[in-house]
Length: 212
Image (cartoon, rainbow, N blue to C red):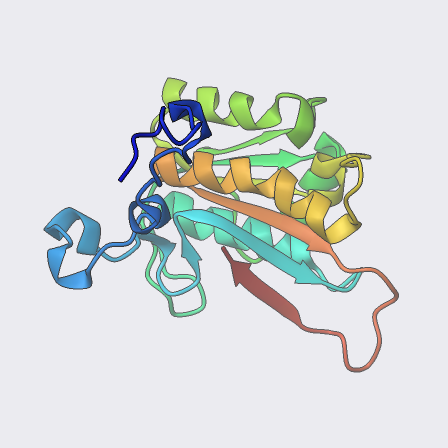
């Protein structure tokens, strides 16, 4: 066979060596997983709130915030919540739509007291797209005892974020991926209280939990 030079070919004309496409996918085999990799996810509220990101969603005015405060109180004291065991830890509650008087009113309406290790703030101005995720990471690093962070509401934390060329669903995915990654890396639970659009109706007086 003629050499590449004799045939009028240069080495630059040959295609580059193909990369191993199988390796690029990052495949693994389940039997090869380590014990650490096999460990099931940790729950702050057993079967309900895992470490990672969870949404508590429902129509307006069906007491989602009351439920979130009851969750916070149960976790802070290590008592069961609706029959589910809890991992006792400190709780940070970002009440982005409320005030001291409003949360005091809600606390007075609850059958259980909000313990002192549920730390509430109405002062956060950052949004998910402009520093809030890093601030939450810094909070946990400074106070490792805080392992449940409740953000009430998601719409306030989201702000008016828009991703160029993306629809609303894709924009939310882009916004939330760093949140989920941070929560898993820090091994904490992050709960967003989310108000679904539209008024409450006879068939919408239910709340749902969705974990990522």
